[in-house]
Image (cartoon, rainbow, N blue to C red; front, top):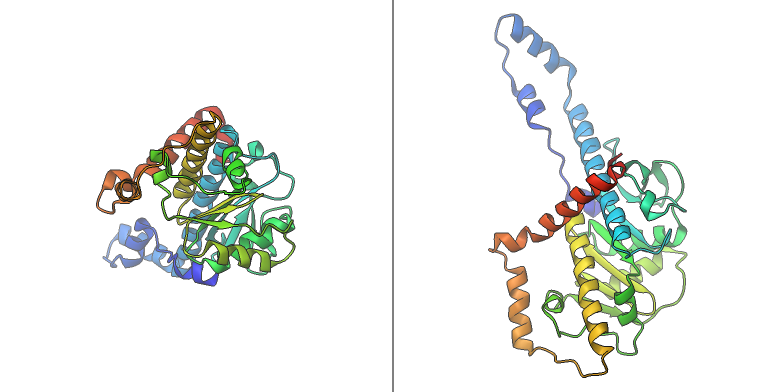
Length: 299
């Protein structure tokens, strides 16, 4: 978690930055500027920016919970999505997580508890489920690049992960998005009660962004809520296509690896601005729908 904190420098807002740099010019208005310079410290600016960013991430995380609930990818009060954020008081980072017993359709930006690196609640009211706290803190520690760690039991992903061969087959364009991005964990051992399980899951994930937790669910790590949301949405669609195709009793027609690699590159081509912005555009569209239907998620 400390490593994650180093990746999130907090910069003063433009308005306050100009205020801090303002020169004293004799006159009535300048005297007002001078007094404001005297009362606004850089520490105050950093705390205010941390609080603002903390809230922005809370809104995004609430949108993910509500969006997945809307698409039927949740399981009531079970499963968890976590996100690292600057602590609202400006002191380091917290892991945002819903308190125990909250249904995903009820989640609001103000709902989250913030946990420190010792699993202590330092923001919000309520307590986190033990297995959620241990798994997510462990994965965040194992993968300090992971701002978001989302664990769900989507129906089709979970179905694929329950097969003797749980491999996502490259039989559709959506499948190609995840070529060489998936790890598989076949060592399901029940509920987690300590950080070691989260660290173990992190090791199983390795340098991949998605993990099939076989006989359990799936886990995704990403640098933004938009990317994590988009990955889960399209992974479920890819798994749905595979399950439906196999249900016909016919053999899958799998794409040749050379073509799969080519399509994957097209999805992730760094200089293709449209592709880079796709997950953001998708997520913002979901937020607009939620804002019309259930705007309380932003409260």
